[in-house]
Length: 148
Image (cartoon, rainbow, N blue to C red; front, top):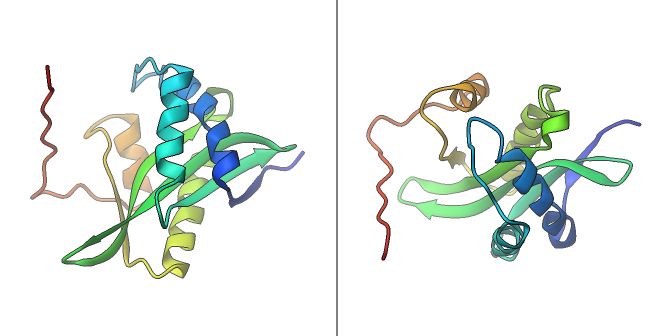
């Protein structure tokens, strides 16, 4: 069956929770998501006003997804990409690249002037984004603080 790339709705986005659980346990992320936590994450993203979601479906099953959220700053209206993931069994087939390109096209059509994301600074994930023409921003850094 062919893989179909299309916009997804909130219901389809909730199905992506299982992809998060499976994809992020793998290197380079090594994150242990619970299904409950991943479902909450997808609920947060898919109920954000102006969100854009795209998916790769085969026989109605979601194989991968990419989510973008509006982010307006002094430089204009950009799309923040907080999540993109593909089932490990379907990685390495170009699905992630096609999802990213579709999300970019949908964002451009919706009037966004740019897209940005956070990812690892080195390794396979960094190379994937560099190959898709994303560049590391030299003047920005991620700062974090744990509570408790």
